[in-house]
Structure formats: C-alpha cells, structure tokens
Image (cartoon, rainbow, N blue to C red; front, side):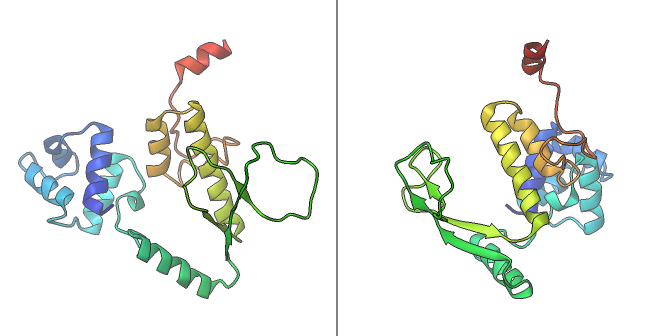
Length: 195
C-alpha cells in the first residue's frame, strides 16, 4: 500500500472528508483537490506536511510513509540484507502437517513444528520463519496476542486497526502495562459480563 492509499484509509477511518481534512492540515478551504491528488498518488506530500497529516490523524507518521517492503520482492530483499548485517538472525523452516488436533503433552525429541488443515492454513505446506532477536520476537508476540483478541471478539476490528496505525505508541506487552497511547475503547458487552 502506497502513502496515498494509506492516507485515504486512515482519513476515512477517522471520519474526515477531504475538504475538512485539507483545512485541518493547514492547506485551506479550497484544497480538497490537493488531498485527492495526494491520495491518488499524483502528488507526494512533503515530509513536513506528512508529519502534520499524521498529527491530525493521530497516528504514527511511519503508518503513512512508503517504506521498504511494499511488495514481496522488496520485503525479501530487506530480510536478505538484514541477514547479511546480522548473521544467524533468521531461521527458515518447513512446517510438518499432522492429523492430530491435540498434541502430546509429554516431552519428545521431535523438533518439528506442526500444522493441521483448517480455515487458517493453506493447502500447501507452509514455511515458518523464526527470528532470533528478543525485541522483534516481543513485537511479534504482542501482534499475535492482539490478533487472537480480535479473533476471540475481545477487541473490535477498529481497535485492532488503531493499535496498528499508532504502533509502537500502543505497545502494551500483551496487556501487561498501560500503553503511551490508549487504543482500547470501552467494550460495553464485556463490561456488562464482568458486572
């Protein structure tokens, strides 16, 4: 997703139309066509304007920027260069299919990582990637935690999107501490169950 597409997505998520957003970022009343040009990719906002847009949209400026990894080839090249800078950081492995749904609880020497067919697994054998970096693993654990919350319905799709566009200010180490930016809304359904 390019800057313009991200800008449009987050602007609409915040509920602003193009004319009011143009005023909010200091471009004036008649600058809606300019916002449309930014969103279509015809024009590119300056770094200063992009920072202002992020402030108005209350998101991390990185959430709006074109960064390396916008397509699969760039993402793979980014991993390759990271591996050159940090040998041993990435470990790719082949996952193994199993019919079992309940795994043995006893310790074994089997070091394979298994998957079973289901809604979330592809028809072909998936590869896994283990990243030997404590900070990065912590980020992935938190991401997994919030994906699981979304799947369980304990957070809304809007809350999950808010968490992503404002990350890392929304980091809460899997709910263990209060993040710098509050992103959870009061969930009345859950609150009433607790009462």
